Amino acid sequence: MKETFDRAWKGVIAPQKYKYNINAICPREQVIDQQIIERIDFIVPKDDGKNISAMIIKQKNTNST
Image (cartoon, rainbow, N blue to C red):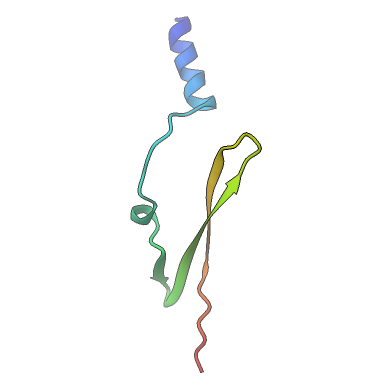
């Protein structure tokens, strides 16, 4: 019983890490409601030497004259 409980809480507190292709989930650019949306990727360094991968999704600036 204790092993089952330990697996349950560890799965919530420290879930298994998965590798994935970010372009398959969210392309760098896409059109939504006739607006070009872009993804900007960046990395945030942590004090322990590891990094956090992050992204911003925003409307792309278009200069139409």
